[in-house]
Image 1: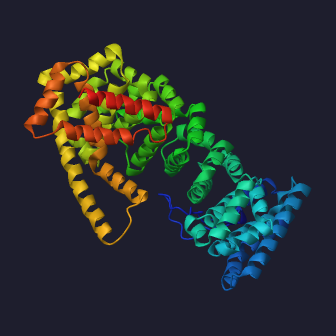
Image 2: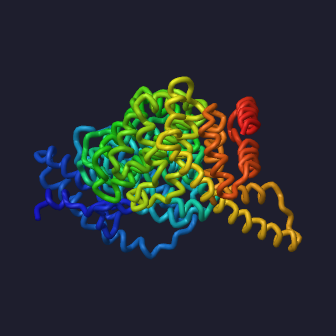
Amino acid sequence: MDVGELLNYQPDRGAKRLRDDDDDDDPRSKKVGRELARHLERDDGEDPSGDRKRILEKLMDDDEDADDQEGEPVDESSVKKMILTFEKRSYKNQELRIKFPDTPGRFMETELDLNDIIQEMHVIATMPDLYHLLVELNAVHSLLGLLSHENTDIAIAVVDLLQELTDIDTLQESEEGAEVLIDSLLEGQVVALLVQNMERLDEQVKEEADGVYNTLAIVENMAEFRPGLCTEAAQQGLMQWLLKRIKAKIPFDANKLYCSEILAILLQNNDSTRDLLGELDGIDVLLQQLSVFKRHNPATAEEQEMMENLFDALCSCLMLAANRDRFLRGEGLQLMNLMLREKKMSRTSALKVLDHGMIGPEGSDNCHKFVDILGLRTIFPLFMKTPKKMRKAGTVDKEHEEHVCSIIASCLRNLKAQQRTRLLSKFTENDCEKVDRLMELHFKYLEAVQLADKRIEGEKHDMVKRGEILDDVMEDEFYLRRLDAGLFVLQLLCYIMVEISNSGISQLQQRVHQILNLRGGSVKVVRHIMREYAENIGDGKSEEFKESEQKRIMDLLENF
């Protein structure tokens, strides 16, 4: 093996989070050989023996140095010493690069030294209570500066180090140390610098693809430790980069999956990031990426996970009224409707997206458009029967029935004029078979909720006996358990029942009351369920909306 090959040789750099193609035993064994080899090939004529020989010896000595350091104990003084060495080597490398920009042989050795000390600093990740030293001795600032180092291998080495320092398990070991480190990273605009670094990485090169993966891991770690930073991260160019990477025409890989995951995290419970995504035409990007799964199922479990992440991101975005309009203009309704008809794996998630897009007064335009594109022909067969394929895909009946009932309830709430007439005529078709199905589901969920109520009453009784206080927190928890047992679906079913009974079509009202009497049901029970629904309505909405909606429901109940 000649010198060039030796310099070119390097073990694979692994990623902390295992990627599918990772077999590396030691993710930190990588050296800056690629970059050195490139420079030395260019610099071949200058010093065929001196620089090459010296750097080769340096590479050979690395393993021995690593063995020597393994025995050293890690304490405050050794960490201080390490940081000092790092600062010196970083400064030396910077100085020589400025002094001899066109003579790589002059600064190559300092680059190897710098890389070595960055690898050694991984040991600090085992002592999060010493993180304050990284901040006090300005090492965080210096590390962030190296993210824009001319040699991408150095930048990637820093990314690996930051990924390990911010590992969520490590951060949770020392809350104080973690807070200090995260504060310092955010102050140094870490996300903006990471994004700039990712922009220049070539993912065709495995090491650089790993660098992108580990960068995303840093963002995930920090977002998990401090969810509030998602807005700042998205605004520092991360949202734009994620959308660009997701729509890039390159084969599916672990990085694309991870991008979809980070995107879903950024959008969770965050109207600022949802709005930003909408402004960046992100709704169109999501719809384009999801359209692939209209007629084809994902090829692998990983691709399926990415599809679910993108659907989750879309559902999050639709919580914001402005994005409902973008979804409508981007023909999102047509795509979801086609997915429901195609009966592929995407069908379950398409149903969830429609539910999010049509719910509440903000969903009015989408409800009208849904009827115009013949969506009722798609949704009612799903109401009449839960498809077996959906059960195989892992969707429970309750989830499917909840989304379908919610879509029908939203249509009844929002539709006006001709579209409303078309919806109500569906309930009269084939001797009111839809009403029969509605009542069948009503009794199914009523029974499930009554069972849950019985259990909860037993628990309350035991708590009172033990002298425990039933406070508001406990009551809320019990209410959530009842919703989970099927109360929410039951409320939707009762709402549909009350709406169609008030439609002015006597045939529908008669059928509802006929089946209630036949099966020992009670108008009183339906009224009680609807009153409870009205009391809990409009969470997160304005007081004005809450009051008008409660009044509307009470008026419907009067005539029921």
